[in-house]
Length: 451
Image (tube, rainbow, N blue to C red):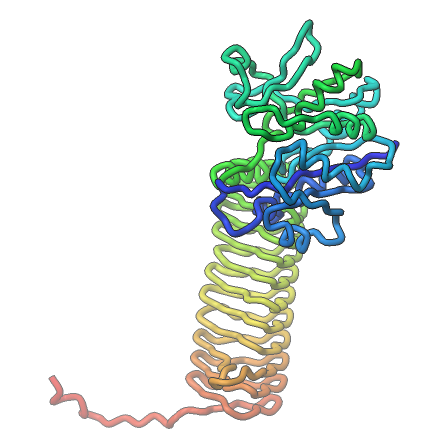
């Protein structure tokens, strides 16, 4: 069976008060439309046609190669949008799912089950419905003798119809050719002078066709029209992702305070503490401790590693390493295995070899650091001369004394030492001690008469 989708995403979204197209607003790091496309693909759609309008070029640019596009140049209602969306597949036979670019919670299992009900029932159309305690803003399902007779838009409902709690989600399954017939019969003789997609149901019923319904969880039908609703659906999606982590063997001590992106992966027996943010293409291994108060963005963490009260941005951390508290791993940094990155340490665009200790109050920028290096407290790699960044190299088994400045570019060869308080401007040979500070002078009694 051929399955297609038409996703309506042309609306202006005035209530968002934004210069960003509504389908491109994100929840859990993914655009609203991206969630809908994923669901359609998982449900078996072979072609997805997205109907664009307001800021449509931006939507096309974001999803180029991931969908086909049709334009709704005039905003004349959902029926009119559907006319544009069905055009690319008008010669096809099969079933089309009608979805919305601002309903990101619709799940592939729901679409799959609804499609099965649609097919087994031999329906010309199937309406995805839901039951809402407060149905304000939704079209109502009107039934006669238990069967759907029509869908009435909220603004056209009578007082009696306003009390109906079974609502139209706006999502449907149609036989393609029968939908095309119904769209050809649409009229805009309503309060808004628009073409309603809902009227296709009444047209099909009047023609003797069978129309079915499939009841979904109301939460899956929630759309986004303003920032409040964006936050609400984002919270639900985040909760789903967190629950999926926990079912996969991850301990989350306070699920309500973990924010997780769509593409995050976490190994089993890892423990995540409160107020942690995991974003982008982040992957965490097994038996790790993450948090509290930690942000990982597009980063990789090995097994048995701890990251506490720290930020890791586009970095890679190995196995058995401890980071934090209060460390900042900046982009393009690679931290090896069994390393200590301590409090108030910043690593930028650097590699740090296995077994190295950078325990506190240190800046490592634009450097290649070997294995088993010890950084004394207050070490600074001085990588910027005011115009250009310079890179330094530190070999294996190097000992850097406290409050050392390494003025890049310099090389400290294997086994080198620097004396505390030194400013190193030249290379230090293997197994050598570099002392770069003034000799101490003591003037006895000098301060006696100062107070």
